[in-house]
Amino acid sequence: MAQYQETTQTNALPLPSAITARGVAATELRPWGSFTVLEEGRGYKIKRIEVKPGHRLSLQMHHHRSEHWIVVSGTAKVVCGEQEVLLGNNQSTYVPQCTAHRLENPGVIPLVLIEVQNGEYLGEDDIIRFQDDYARTED
Image 1 (cartoon, helix red, strand yellow):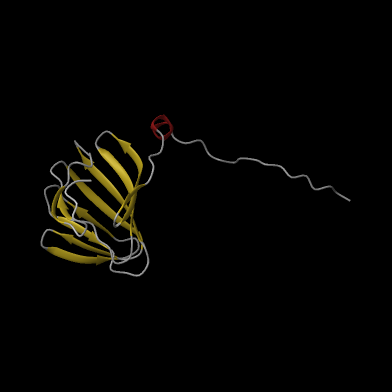
Image 2 (tube, one colour):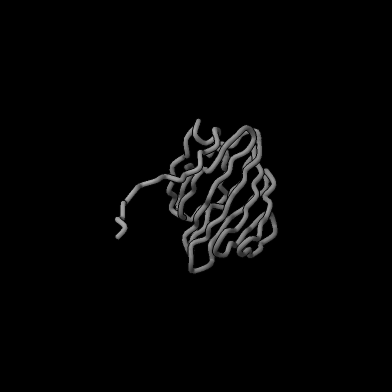
């Protein structure tokens, strides 16, 4: 009769040095949901954004960055300039810098998307809010 021996083995792949050198950022909570910075480098930042059902981000713009949004799950209602569009899984959109935009989850499940920011300055203080459901003047 063979004996069963319990072992613990880690088969984790090593993280790229860009991630291990800076560490992975913690998730930041917002009234509408949360975001996590997945990776950041010179001129770009990649975030995972989750928007709660029935919530939306402020109508805003950025002077120093553009954004690409890719829907992972859920439904995104996107206002970009004068256009409004609904996006589903694996659909994407581009938000040019200096363009008013808003992201909303009109669905009943969480909206998850990947945001890729490009620009010379990617700080959270580069947000000009035109309208906000949560009466925020700054993050």
